[in-house]
Image 1: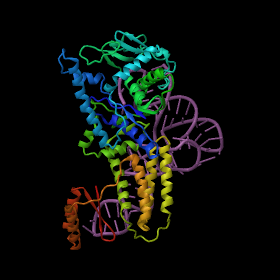
Image 2: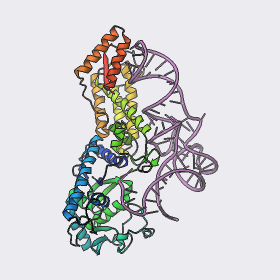
Image 3: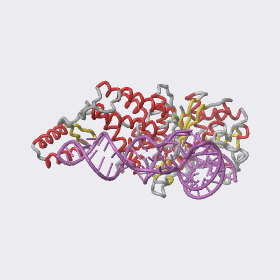
Image 4: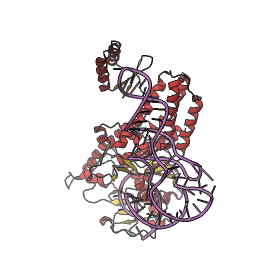
Length: 453
RNA sequence: GGCGCCGUAGCCAAGUGGUAAGGCCCGGGACUGCAAAUCCCGUAUGCAUCGGUUCGACUCCGAUCGGCGCCUCCA
């Protein structure tokens, strides 16, 4: 599985992160279904914006070494930030995280191969792909080649192309840019060539799944197909999977609208990053998602319900309501939920429906457990299912139930105050614990439960 | 101009020919010293609008209105 990774010149925004969360969902679903996944995510560390931002402060006569060093300083910084964000969101690390700059020789060889096949041509030190040489060009994006108008805004530096729709494979160096040596003179790789080169190098001539955001369908993925299939002479990717965009508060995210957020912004506003993960993954990946803080709050509350249920199953039953009129076999009920969950996930990652299967199970078993306590064996079976689902959603893990001495002492103090019917003191201690993130639950049998809240 | 998507309760959202899942919020009740958690009850005679096909349509077809995307750098 190959996923188009970040361009590391700044903080990733939550729209970028939605795509990486979708890819993580896809990957984890395969893994949970016992498939081996070999995952490659590229790090784009040479590109126009990176060059712009990293070179601005350098003098005009800076050496190529200096320019490379400045570029590397910027990309290494934001690569680290990016990986931290993924970790915060519980996104699994890819097996391969190739940096584009580490594969320049591979890209050059690929361009040479295309040149040898007559699919590439050189103009003033740059190399272009001849789209006319590949009949299937445009198939992925459903573009009508006749209908592709010659661009009204052809880049000033690319006027020498044979056709306005041909794209660049290798860019001749311009003054003030870092460069590499190549058969065509000093230059740097085009944006599209890196994914083809690294994907073929690390995953081979056949890739099962390639994914990215919908905006990459054209031209990026279309061009990747052209490059890889032009070189290989056969289909390269079996399945393309694209995640939809994220809107914010009903509008397209933009800095001028003030609705442009990074993960750090959300955390600073008090959001639980895992709730953000849940909010994203509880919507279908192929639908535009409107992010809102109200939605984030709803996600937090939904998660509370699942986590509270998990903790209830980890503990012992407290039934006391007499016989349950609609007694059902919990293990059979659980199996129904598991089947519904997997049927939904197998149906193009229908997460809203998969989660619904979990919630109806929670409602049913909560009600039953109120009346006829589930046995230890049944509770463990439920927990195993929650773990199974959590291996995909990564939002309701088992949490170690260890209390420090101070918390235990406070709980004991409150119990004594309660025994003495000193309600004011009991409430005061309960508030104090709440401020420490501990929520108490008084049980029917007089014991006190607690959870992190 | 070409290609494509979407419009389901206050909010999010599944369903896509057989009579509206689920979550959040909200109201009433039970339990509780009060809470919390949990439970019970309630909350869309209707799925943008108007036509058509059908025994039957939210689901199919057509039109209209509204929102969005791509065809150019973008997750």
